[in-house]
Length: 213
Image (cartoon, rainbow, N blue to C red; front, side, top):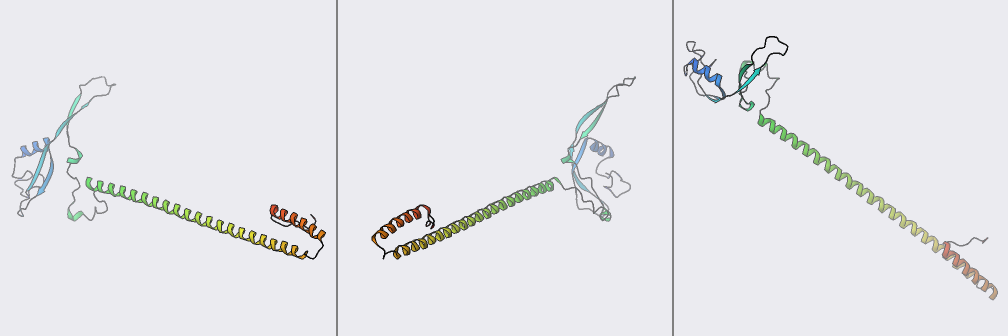
């Protein structure tokens, strides 16, 4: 049909079947496959597969405001599912450069592949965000550990300084006691009591009492 034949005497129906057969075929069936086969230069034979179309009816009713009531007009249509439609985009090679900027829509398999690729990209992005969160948590943990170690070391240094200070005070206290060895018994007794008081004060307060106390 159409440009399927190059012979003007047989155009437009060709020689495989009559015009009545092809008209009825096109009205009750729809083509789901058409494959070109090897031909001579003056013919364009092809193999096609046709499927009987389902018929659906639509009823058209006039407006309620019309005075002359007419009967319902029932029109029959062929129902062709989208997955059984042949592509309508057909361009001759001499015009491909004109329509190159508007590529045809991708088929269903390509759309599924694109959707699957987008889903994979989304999953990869989500995994990357999760990895970044884990790395950030590990960095925070290491920072906290470093701060705790720093605090522990500073506390240890502070305790060491306090201990050293106490040792120096004890040495001074002992040196003061050794200076009073040449005194009398009363002075020794007095110094002993004073030393006892100072020792008790040092044990309670961690420092020697002032001279006024």
